[in-house]
Amino acid sequence: MKFVSEDVAGRVVSMGEAIAAVEAMFMEYGRGLAEVFPVAQGRGPEADTSFSVKSGLIAGSRKVGLKVGSYWPGNRARGLAAHASTTLLLDPDTGYPEALVAASHLTCLRTAASDAVAVKHLSRPDSRTLAVFGAGHQAWFEVLAMREVRAIERVFVVNRSGQAAEDFAQRIREELGLEAASASARDALARADVAVTVTASRGPLFEAAWVHPGTHVSAMGADQPGKQELDTALVAQAALFADVPAQSVSIGEYEAAFKAGLITEDRITSIGAVLNGAPGRVSGEQVTVYDSSGMALQDLAVATLALRKAEELGLARTV
Image (cartoon, rainbow, N blue to C red; front, top):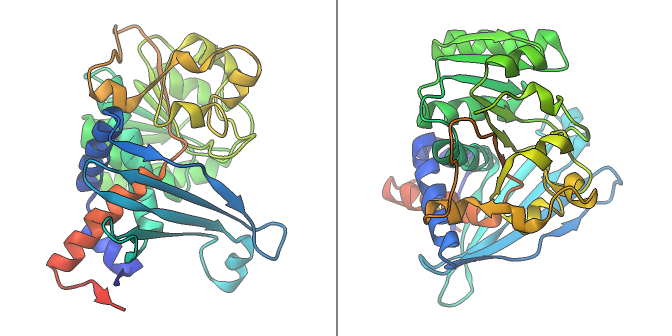
C-alpha cells in the first residue's frame, strides 16, 4: 500500500489543480457515474470529540474509498490541530487498500474547490468584489480559490472579532496584493458580487434583505445537523444549488428552511447537473446560493490526484 504524508500532499497539489479535479468529479456525478454513500458519525472516548466517515464511488474513473474527518478539541493543548482528515483509497479491482493519503490540507483544498466550481458557474462573470464571512484557516483557502475562477480585485472580511478581520484583511493585502478591509456584514454585502460563508455558526450571519440582486452566495459551514449560516428567508427566495441536494436538507445549509416548510428538495439543483446542462444562473439580477456540505467524492478526486503526483515525483512511500 502507498502512503502520502501530510507534507507531501501539501506540496504536490495546487489550488487550480484541485478545482479542476473537483469539477471533473462533479461532471461524472451529474451524469450518474458516481455515488455518495450514507455518512457515519461517531465520537472518541471524550464526549466533546467527534468523527465522520464519508465514502463514495466514482465509477466512471474507477475511484473508490472513504475519508475519516475527526475533531478532537483537546489536541490544542497538545500542540496539535483539532481537526484531522485521512483518506483511504481502495483498489477498484480487489477492494484492498491501495493508498492512505493524509488529507487535512487536501480537505481545505477540496472544500474551497467545491465553492470555486459553484462561483465559476453560478456567479456573474463580471464579479470583482468578494465578501468573506470568517477569518480562520479555511477562509484563506476560500480567497485563494475565488481568485482562480474570478478576477477578484477587493475583499471585505466579516468576523465576530474585529481584530481578526483586520489581521486577515492585512494578510490579503500583503500576500495577494488585493484591496482588502474589515467590514460589517451589511456594508460588505452592499458591495459584494460574491459572498462566501466560512463559519461554524448555528444561526444566520446576516439578514436576507442585505443581499442585493445579482449576488452569489457560497455557504460551506453547515455540515452537521443544526448548523446554519444563512437567513431562511434568503434560502426561500434564492435559486438553490448544492453539491448533494439530499444532504443539503439533512445536514447542510438548507436544513432549517426545509424543516420550516419554506422549501422542498426539488427546489435544489445539484452543481453536477448544472455542469451537464441544467439551468444555473438565468439572469444578472438573480440571487444564487450554493450549499457545500461536503462529499467523499471530492476527497477521492483530490486524494487520487495527490497520489498520482506523489508517485510521479517519487514522494509516495510503500508501507
